[in-house]
Amino acid sequence: MQQHRMNIVIAGHVDHGKSTLIGRLLVDTNSLPEGKLEQVKRLCEKNSKPFEYAFLLDSLQDEQSHGITIDTTRIFFKSKLREYIIIDAPGHIEFLKNMVSGAARAEAAILLIDAHEGVAENSKRHAYMMSFLGIKQIAVAINKMDLVGYSEEKYLQIKNEYEKFLEKIGIEPVAFVPTAAREGVNLNSLSEKIKWYKGKTLLEIINSFSKKDVILESPFRMYAQGVYKFAGHNNKRRTIAGTINSGSISVGDEIIFYPSGKKSKVLSIEEFYKPPKNIAVVGEAIGLTLTEELYIPQTELICKINEPQPKLTNRFKASIFWMGKKPLSLNKKYKLKIGTQNVSAVIEKIENVLNTSELQYFDNKITVEKHEVALCIVKTDSKTAFDLVHEMEATSRFVLVDNYDISGGGIINENMAEATVIVQQKYSDFEIALNNFIRENFPHWEAKPLGQEG
Image 1 (tube, rainbow, N blue to C red):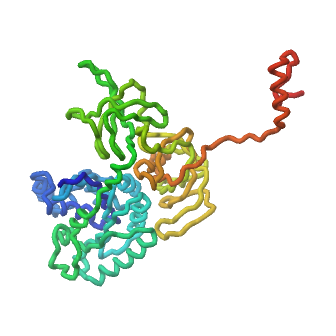
Image 2: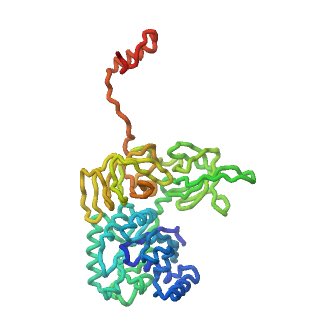
Image 3: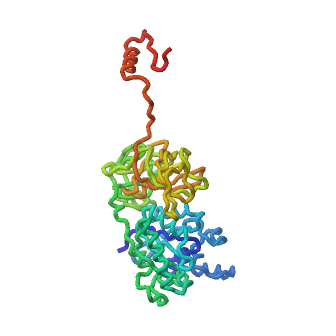
């Protein structure tokens, strides 16, 4: 039985072979569009370039000219078990934030390490980011084994070193697999070149990842990504479009919008070029029409009234991974984006800072440097709707924008009391009550408001 589509991120240090591995996997499983392989081979021959499997993915001109993956590439892939979206995340340190944005959608991860180069600093950062984003299903591919003569000793050396690091950050990988992507070793079938390896192929490991069925059972969450009004054919209803983050929605369900608090019922569930349906589930892109005509901003989080509700406050505690050109600073205005919500925010307090490569904690810092993680108290200028990371990952993740540049990513750990202004009381309760009584009952005495005596 075909299962629902799964998102997998593949990450690793630059030149450790991610694009080559994915390209070869697509070829070996016949997942490429018809004629694509021959087209790329002809183009390489025309330009007098040796064919590389990575060229199948490098669609951006800058990527081919520089030889590195700049942005996160999404590849549609299909095995006998189910469909996948494989996210080829950039490995270069300067593109780490692109990797984070790609990994934020993933349910499982493959971490790639070059057998010849060994564990790089970015190999540690990427592993920490997987843990930080709540990705529990992680496998490690030790690639380019052909460059070390398929040495079991070298494989075990890297495996033991990386395994100890992963244990420190709470990651227990489901498997380690030795591969040589260019040669197709241990991708779709076990190779005679590595007889000492008795484990699963990379494809078998990918197929063994379990789908997060719990998301279907979770409370309904969907961000309003667009509101459309179609005229003609007696249809003037507004359609609220979005992709379901968790749970399910049915015609007739009572829903509430956050942060506005507006309520209505679902009149219909629609999809492009398909007939209306009675129910939609997590992962589906849909449009909702309502029984009442409501004005809904394209920044609302939609929930069902009879289910657990999200948090709604202007203050929370979050773990933030900083990637900005300038340090993250206290009391500086940033834009915080969570789902389609976009609010101004300041860092009220930095509780501690973690160096992600050395795993060292620092207290009493007033800034967070590039590639550091900090536990912070964040205050927004208006109420924001969210869930906590241990409750629901998708609606706990946010980004921070500094001067139009996405500079940080975060997850919300704790809901905190709303920020209030406390004014020191100068007068006794008796004096305040007496003054109010005189003003209300004896206005001709001209009692002055407290603070204006004299």
